[in-house]
Image (cartoon, rainbow, N blue to C red):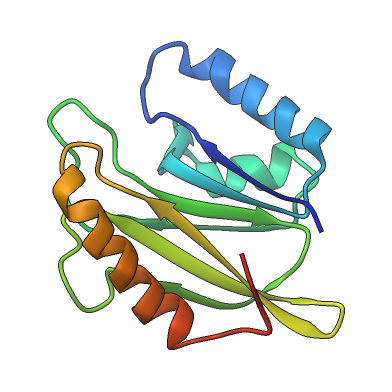
Length: 153
């Protein structure tokens, strides 16, 4: 099992070139599951990031959930995403019930060799170091411990 994670840096700077390079790198990497942070909702005009990855990579299973807070001024809407060779059995987020203070987490479960594998994708707020630890603890309690899988990553 190969699992990778990438922060896409939700910036428009050289976005078309970066987007092509991201698709090329993900194809070359050939991971089973990739977690993406700062994933803009739109890849290009009238094309979602989900559709882009389905069309431009070998990953048939793509999910992205938009973070519910409005983006900062001048930024694009973004979220957390997973691309996978394995179908998703379950998806949960940490923003379903309570405020997250810009600390986001999304967990997927997939079937791997007859066992349930849980993978959690986390993007923490760089501006509030004092709150990161408490959010990590909450993420573990709410997403991992309370909805455990046979294996967790």
